View 1: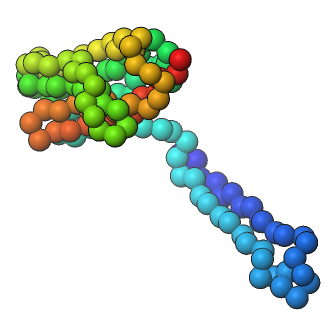
View 2 (view 1 turned 90 degrees about the horizontal axis):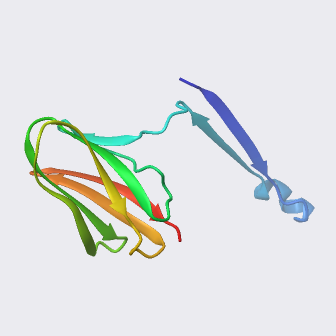
Length: 129
């Protein structure tokens, strides 16, 4: 665990002397972790971040199911319009991998959703052409 405080001061040197103290702002932030979550989880299900991301033509996601379960994985555009179902059916328990061919997708940000019963896990992926 990393704990470090960062500070910065923003000032405006051309401000009138009478209000110079009114235009100085001090910002502070503290970091407590240097890691980024690589998967989202709910009720034993998980959906990893695709790799590579961003990508031009193909990418891969890992996902896990705690038991045999019906799973649907879909791609939607950023407005929520469903574009494609990339996996659908009853999936055995364990870790699985799914590849996405994006040759027919335009550049942009897309949403990948894993659904199973009440579980709904969401990730963003970025296509660059």
